[in-house]
Image 1 (cartoon, rainbow, N blue to C red):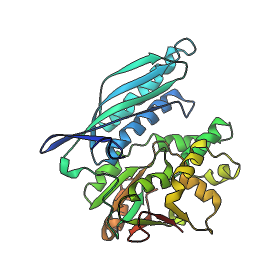
Image 2: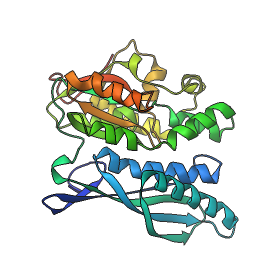
Image 3: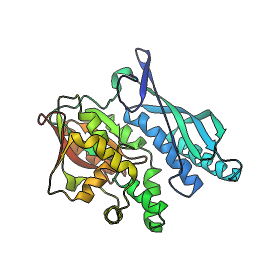
Image 4: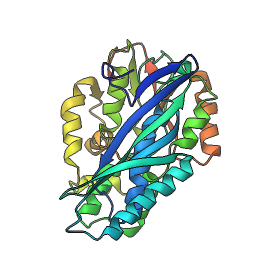
Length: 306
């Protein structure tokens, strides 16, 4: 599984009972605290392995650092944040690479293990399946508010904690349920990643907009025009796959296209087990998990938001 399919990570079969999952991700700081940035970047990089149903095992740091303009102690805090998050995930840091750059960047390449028959892809949606989202939306809009100095300390703490939360528990729980497909919601936004699941699947999806979890204050910031450029790009690229009801608040539509950082898993599970999976997630402390829609036969390869 590689370049020919737009999936969350690459998968290489080693033997009949072992495959490697490989992914890489890095970005510029989205919060001011270096330690928190390291944690978020690590959680984000690990997420692709969880989305494929795998268990991350090793990681390597990727660093670009402005050595002439920034104290090396900042880098130490970033790497410590990443290392602590890897330890939480049970992942071993085995090395890395750094370059001097004018712009700070940090992330990781990650390798995970999975049985070849248990690989989850974005495809394989089944009619009647339900869609569960494990984290609320709005990180892109709130991060834009943070950059503009308009976000409250409370919401900064909330969104930082959310982005630094691993998808590990959700991935482990869904192993026990008939999950047919999965992805993690990141840069393409909720509707963008769902579109990747629906296109060429032979099925369609219906989303209940009023069920989609949204971070506090996101609507207020969206109403102030604090929409990141990525949301407009996502809309331009993916709105051809979505039919949004005229009755939906345009700000909600903006949030559905909002690019997320270290977002939740979007899990496609057999309909008659969806409620059981949802309750298991909540019992594990994933309180924001919600059934947001279902997979239908029509309209094929389209998303209906109502």
